Amino acid sequence: YIKYSDGTAEGWGSATLSTVPVTTAWGNVFSSGANKITLPSVVNAVPDRCELCLLETSSGVLLDVAGAPTQTATQPFYFVSGTSKSGITAKVGYRVVWQWQ
Image (cartoon, rainbow, N blue to C red):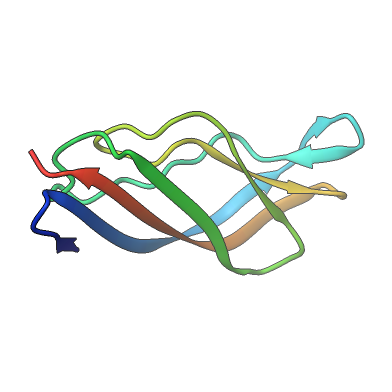
């Protein structure tokens, strides 16, 4: 992470999620359940910004983000596909910005 002189801090990382089912029908698409990434303990306040991106995946899925982050975890995100998938592996990256406490 980086801490700037004005008190703003910025951190980033990634997590690999394995065997995530994308099987819940939602209209014409299928969705996983809610996923979150635990943030490192250096994040000492609720982030003002939390950006997520899909870095790698074992199959064609998109990332759908909903909700807000907490001090300890990213906002919930879902994997979405046009077809049901019994279990995927995906690497998700994050970037958080917060005011150092």
